[in-house]
Amino acid sequence: MKQSIIIFILSLLWACKKDKDTYGIPNIYMPQALNVSGGISANYPVPTGTDSSTYNYAIDAAAKKLNIILGVAQSSTNKSEGYTVNIVTDADTINLLKFNNILDANTLLMPAGLYTLPAAVNVPAGKSEGNFLLSLDIDQLKSSDYEGKKLALAVRLQSAGKYAIAANAAVTIVIVDVDALVIGPSKDISSQYLKNTSTPFTVAGMHSGGRWGTLTDWIANTAAKSHDGYGGYASDEGGTIDMESGWGSPAIHNGKIWQTTSSALPAGTYTLDVSNLDWQGTKDPTYIVVAPGLDTIPDYGDINGNTTIHYTLFSAPKITFTLTEERKVTVGFAVNYVQDQQGFKIYSVKLLNYPKHL
Image (cartoon, rainbow, N blue to C red; front, top):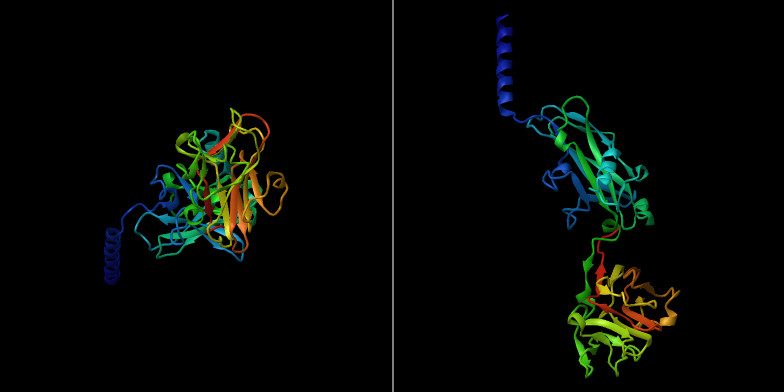
């Protein structure tokens, strides 16, 4: 009996010592619900980070999966016991955020067929936290249905009985920027391969009237030099790439301005971005052109339907293209102004590369 009492007292003393060394309330929470906004919101943007050491996802090329890394943690220092927590999704939360315009119209509820999630996470004794993966199917993610969109999923923790869930950190709103994953993030390489790409553009010569000029580093054909042998540049708004007819200036038929990259572009994905422009004066279709392997751009009449080049109208001023081998590329603009009083002004030309993309 005496020995039993001594053992009981020792066990109480050990329990007291254990409690003294342990602190915090052992609630379960999701670190991702807090660690981007600092608790202001539960939004968790994907991708986050700038290189392989900070990306919040990993690629499983063999399985064609994009694995978004999520986790659970226990908020006390007691690691003596393991725990299990259930993982569920919450479509109502996303629909409510969209209804209240907290998530914009460009953000869609992530379709259930696009992802997989574990039903639960088991954290063993000796650890306070564990990871789990939200796995997205890469082929589906690259569908044109999601181009330019964001996909949102509310991932919620549910108690499996051992510990309570911290209410203010129970759900993470995963927001996947599809374009940033599929073809981005982008890197501006304009200065590496092109010259004279933004206002104030430099000129090789100016018309005596002082408004029209000829650009350095760009080539303008005779039709584009419609102001007594000068053209392609206007001094408007600090200096812009410009072609204009009417208001006393002659019509421009098959007017072209172009520049070839200073060296070959490596195989990869690129975008020619001319979105910083004013094209409202343009009435007849005006083309932005990317011509891989050529030292000029085709004539105006040879652009539409030409499968050897990439082209778009000024109403959609970005061209994304892929090179399967190292090649020089010519970029430019082509007009055929038949109607009177029209033109455009370009403030910058950007060439973007996507060193990391799916």
